[in-house]
Length: 386
Ligand SMILES: Cc1cc2nc3c(=O)[nH]c(=O)nc-3n(C[C@H](O)[C@H](O)[C@H](O)COP(=O)(O)OP(=O)(O)OC[C@H]3O[C@@H](n4cnc5c(N)ncnc54)[C@H](O)[C@@H]3O)c2cc1C
Image (cartoon, rainbow, N blue to C red):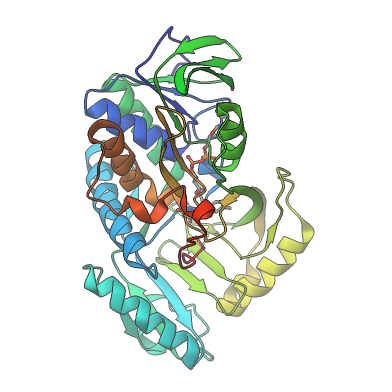
C-alpha cells in the first residue's frame, strides 16, 4: 500500500489508521463516500497490531452483546470475501466460585436473549475443549463457540486494500497538527505535510483521542486515558493445543490463546498509567508467567519469545465514546475502546458510517454517547479484557 500524497480536499477525513479508522474508511468508501485516512505512522501502528486477536460476544449488557453479534457477522462475511484469517474457535471463561457462576448466568441470559448461543458447561466439558487445562479448582465455564480470533495485521491490511479499491485514500506518515475552524464549522485540517480541506472529521485515534479533541477545541469532557497493557508470546507448540481464547478472572484477568503460527499469545489485567510509555516490564513477565501456568501447568515448559506493550484507551466505564460532537460541525469521535476495540471495529464502522450518511443507526449507538460522562450517566462497566 503506497503512501499517497495528501489530497487537497476530501469530503470526509478520518484521523487514525488503526482497525477503527480502516474499517470505517472501508465502509464509507463502499457506500460511495469520498474519504481519506490520515495516519501519523503506518496503518495499524497504534494499538491494533499489538492486540491479542480476541473477538467475543460474551459481554454483560444488551448494547455490547448486540454490537458484537453484528460485528461477528461482519468478521465472517469479510474474512471470507477478502481471505484473511478469522476463526470461530470460541471463548471459554473459567469460573471458580458460586459468585462468578451467578454473574455469568446473568450474562449468558442476556447473550442468549440476543441470539448469542453461550452456555454454562462443566469442568469436564471445558477440559474436552482444551485438554491442557488445570480444572481442579474450576467449578463451571461459560462457553460460546461462535466467538473467535482474527489476525490483526492481515485483517487491517485487507480492509485497507479493499477500501482503496472502493476509492478511499490512505495517507501514511502524516500527522494531524490542528484544525481550521470557522464559526463552529470545520474547514480543514493542518497536517505535517500541509493542509487538507474537509467538512467532516472523525477522530479515530483511540489512545490519542484527547489530544485531537483539544486541537479541535472541544469543551465537552470526554475522559479517555492511555494505559500501558502488555502481552506475551511463547515458542510455537503443536497446532490445535489451545483453540479458544481461555479466560480466568480469578487468575489475574488472564486471557490466552494459540496463534496460527502456534505460539501462545495473551496477557493479564496488569496495567500501568495513565502513560504514553510503552516499555515492557519485568513485573508483567512475572505476573503473566505465574497466572498462565496456573491455568495451563504445561506452559512451564515453554520459552517466552517476546513481550511488548500497547495502549488500552480507557474510559471510566470501559465503554467507547462513539458519536457526533454537536459543538463543532461535523465532528465525530469513535475512541476509548478500553481494550476491546479490535473486535468491535466492523460493527462500529457500520454504526459511524450510518450516523454520517443517514444521521441515524439501528445499532445501539446511544450506549456509547460521548456526552454521558458530562451528564454523569456512566454505563455498567463493560467486561474489559481481550
Ligand atoms: C496487548 C493488547 C491486547 C489487546 N487485545 C485485544 C483483543 O484481544 N481484542 C480486542 O478487541 N482488542 C484488544 N486490544 C485493544 C485493541 O488493540 C484496540 O482497542 C484497538 O486496536 C483500537 O483500534 P483503534 O483503531 O481505535 O486505535 P489504534 O490502532 O491505536 O489507531 C489509532 C491510530 O491513530 C494514529 N494517530 C494518533 N494521533 C494521530 C495524529 N495526530 N495524526 C494522525 N494519526 C494519528 C496512531 O498512529 C494510530 O495508528 C488489545 C490491546 C493491547 C494493547
